[in-house]
Length: 149
Image (cartoon, rainbow, N blue to C red; front, top):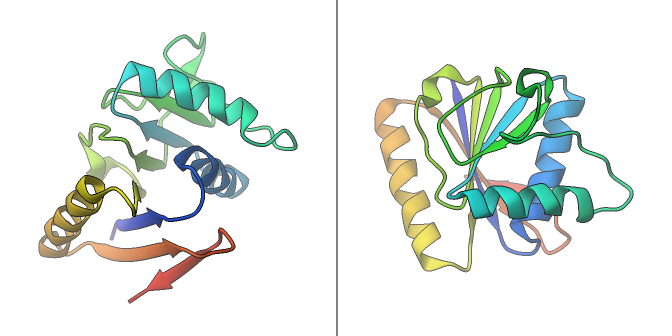
């Protein structure tokens, strides 16, 4: 059964939190696609993933990449999956599309933005009805993650 995880950001920026989650996925041998709300978001996250942590290197691509299928992480504002990703990360109002094709789905939202919290609650209810394996993670003061009931 597909695992659907909700990550509520409280401390770190979405870019920094995403970098850490993507690093874990790539280190586990998984490919990821990140679905964002607009081309501007893709450009911003593309830049941020290079700059958010000078000690970290996360290879990733966008539609400007010459060989997207070879990228461990692909950023997009569409429903595409050009790198045949195992995991999908949806944030900033990114399109959902065919999420059933992924081994694991991550919804990342900012806990201090009411519209994002409301949307996450609705998604949770939707996946609860579908019988998905759900997990809710809340960011701690130290920036780590605590699984909630």
